[in-house]
Length: 533
Image 1 (cartoon, rainbow, N blue to C red):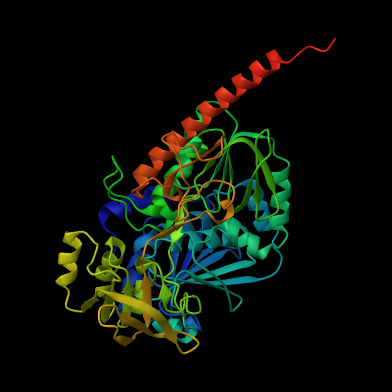
Image 2: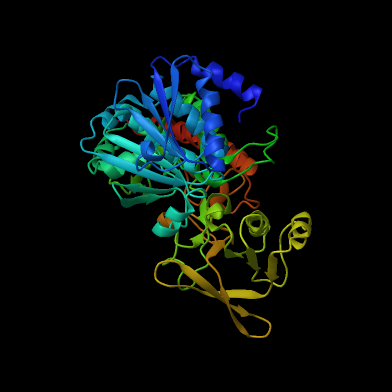
């Protein structure tokens, strides 16, 4: 199951295990059970601290098969995987082995204590797909919580393997998280976000801490590539720097593959986001995560940034790097069936539509790439493009045209996404040249029509373009002196990671130049002020 190279690497990791681990496998006679058996036997052979046991038939009880527990010997600590955690989840498996085996969990001390203090029984079920780049953070976060507090239990379930459960629970997006049998959340979540939902007082306590912070020389709003670059350049100047982020990493966290960042041949979005955060944390930067900016208020001697949690931060200069989000198609049914057949990430949610019919809305690179990926999983893909022709690169269009289970409609305006009240059942579109109306029967709709800048909270504060982007000059300066902006949220063309990083550095340098000049002007004003005898 594991090749020699991976075995060698895993063996070196398992040397960090300090407490005995018991792996208990629940198997049937299926092919997947045989694969899982081989994987677990390989793992157990790599460390004397790991024991392996199999249970079948009546001995397996009501456990899902195939599945397995990783248990800490002589304790109640365990995590469970229902499936074969390879692909993106192999890291989750390795971390689970290490953490159950006593290796320290890498979280802030306050967060660890908050997890340990949770009172009650928290039984999580996490439905994931092995191709989902967002799922591992949820799995790893709850696994870590389970190793810190035996009251937290988790079963990670491969939705593609347990299709019957997915159908029964009508799960059409991953990760989907159940807590004690009820839907707890969907989408990417870290430990802090999960705790914030479990501990209702966490938000107000966090706001109180933010209110007590001193004035920042430079406050960066946004934690994507632009925000990270701005923070690094500011911190290197030796000034008091803060980053306020709704989720550090930003849209990069939702990016499957990055192959055009200069000097990095290929990487994945979440891995790149982790590297960004590690680089920023190497400097003296105050990162305030899971905080959404709600208002920017000039005060005469600086700025206030007010958050949705009720906190107020003060700064002498501000760099806005709030990025963008997926654009909605804005037709009836889209919001009603979001995560119930309407999806935005083909890599994450595609496996849940195996053998089904889906549509992709959008004929740019993202839309065509989505259609190509989905064609290898679903029974049929219909791609709908509003314009007269596809806008994707020719190499992608050639690949698309070669696929037998893809139909392309141009001049197609989506008018409605329909369903049965529980899930998507169809899509209506208008043929713009003839005015003819059409209806497609299908089970999934993937929206891939571009981005919307996150600037709603800035209306009336800084000048915005007709598309809602922040207008900036060559230095990243906005219409408000002392406020700079960078990345996908601005009018700078070509929304690319490498461009966002450069623009973040430029805006930070522009803001630093502003701070220097404004301090000199203040000193000159002070000297010119008349002396009162």
